[in-house]
Length: 328
Image (cartoon, rainbow, N blue to C red):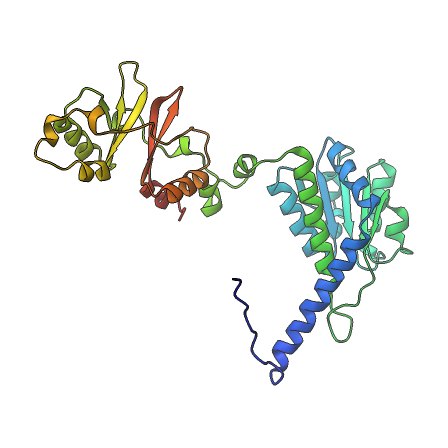
């Protein structure tokens, strides 16, 4: 049964009332934009997929801050991109834009004076220009090769002046472009890791082969080994288990602390590994994501997993290894 959270009565708190009005206003604007999104958006995606260079974003003031974030999102999802400040472009940074690039210019009014030279530059060198504005009669909209006009939804500011709803729409549209691009290119979680090697996100996107224990660290015993030898191996390696291999060095079973408890009797040490092991153990491949491996271990309630190639063990991963790379 779904738990319903009842919000407290906030009629006496004007701050919460104002905040809810702002969030509702911006959410409605996003729904309006989504419902009117059409082929001009698809044309922009096709354009950005076809260019051989980078995506250059630009804008002044609050639009510039949004443009900078959009460039960062593109770059983090595998699309080379960076922000060019229009004022700096007028003093030499125009050379950062090449004929292989596409320019995305953001301006709420579409009449930002500092963008004039960038607009002229794109026309002179036949560089595609994506103009994002709320004014379909503006200079930016009319001179863009790929104009996108946002809904003229009122700003959340009570005076209707502070950039709030308009910048939220611009930011969301940038996210929509980035996600559409990565979907079209078949961008994967592994690709994402390439551009996010640090932090907890990098850890979660690591593959098992980057963290597994190999070679002499592997707790392996032969099927015919005595249980006394198995216990020595388990104690030395410290993984709480031992993998059992046959004469072809294939993994045919695993012995865990749980198996030892289940078979605890006076003649335990007289038995061989293949008499105590659990056959057909659960295994994974070296290219398995660490997050997927942890999910599997949690589901099966186990603390270690062997990594195999052609059913031959090449590594082992333990639950402590996930903590080591910041995955919980």
